[in-house]
Image 1 (cartoon, rainbow, N blue to C red):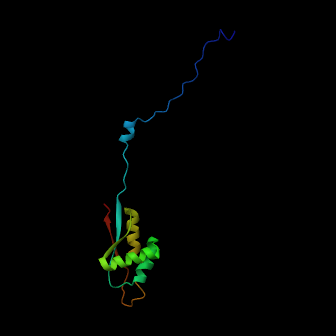
Image 2: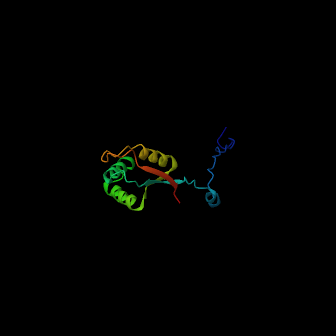
Image 3: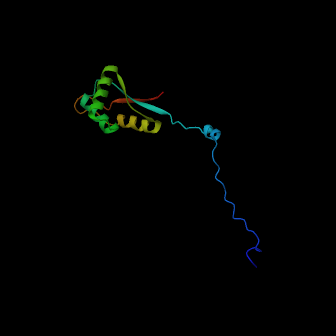
Length: 120
């Protein structure tokens, strides 16, 4: 049998990758995770040193940032110390609550107070 007499064999068909159309791309939805503020509340039972130390250890804030936040909580009565997803915000709030009393003030009974609020 000569090559001219051989039956023609088509190469295997390749599956074409489906390309997304512009319309399909527009229909994709972005999932937005709700964000929450961790709010620190003022009291008279904690020193600036305590607040600065706690914000550094719990949130990783620099001394300068923590000092600015300590001033704001003292003047305004509250300060947003972090904005994050709900689970991390709850963890950070709980870490503030469990940080302990300010040893610099003998009558200090415990940690500072923090709460969560939805970020807009």
